[in-house]
Image (tube, rainbow, N blue to C red; front, side, top):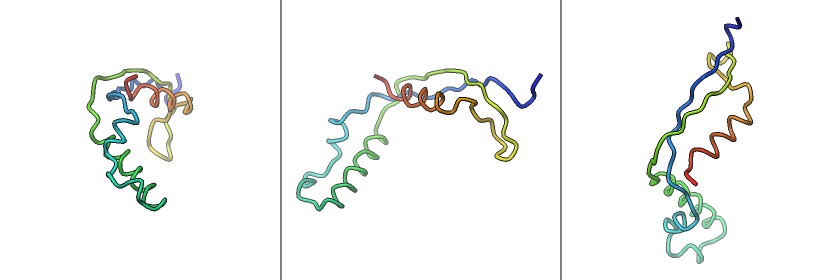
Length: 94
């Protein structure tokens, strides 16, 4: 039995759908009058504000095969890309 391997249960909160209308509602009224740099900052700030205001709508549980990383003192998924995809697609309700 490999003591550095484990199947880990992960639970993530799922949030309501983030859409462009919700983000747009966080933009300043004069966004189109701003310079390109200011507009980029305003959009980034609007996305951050929208993310902060999202409501949790549930939880999603899944398991992932992991290996213990001695250097980092943490369990890391063996299939990091698959793990990232699962997180990205399950955190927001669609």
